[in-house]
Length: 142
Image 1 (cartoon, helix red, strand yellow):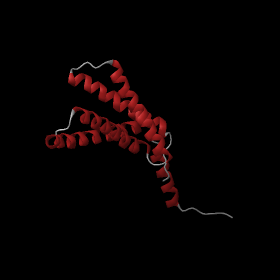
Image 2 (cartoon, helix red, strand yellow):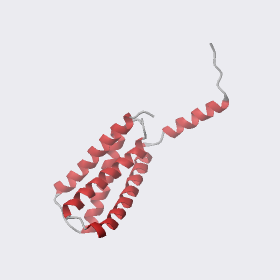
Image 3 (cartoon, one colour):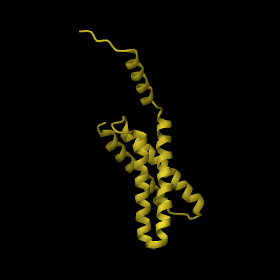
Image 4 (cartoon, one colour):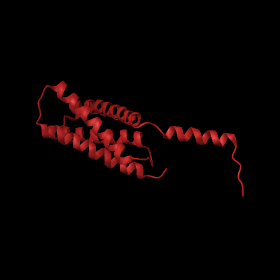
C-alpha cells in the first residue's frame, strides 16, 4: 500500500529536523544565558527579601546554593529540552561553564582568595547538578 505525503508535510518535516540539529556550542550558550538570567532574577528577588527578613549567614549560603542549582536546572532545560539527545553530556557542560564563569567572576570581583578546594567543589557541584538535570530532562517524554 502506497502513501502520499503532501509538499506541506515535507516542509514541516524538514524544518523540524534542521531545528533539532543545533550545534553543541550554541546549545550550551543558550543554556548558559538562561542560567545567568535566572540567577540575576533570583539574586535580585533575594536581595529585596533580605532587607525584611534579615537572614543569618547560614541561610544566605543555602539560598545561594539553591539559586545556583535552580539556575543550572533552568539552563539545562532550555539546552536539552524534554526528551532531548545527549542530556547528560549537555547538562554537565552547561553546569561546568556556568560554575566556571561564576567562580571566575567571584574571584575577580570579591578580591577574596578562597581555597582551591572551595572553587573545585563549586565546579564539581555544577557538573554533577547539570548532568543529573540533563539525564532527567532528556529522559522525559514529549
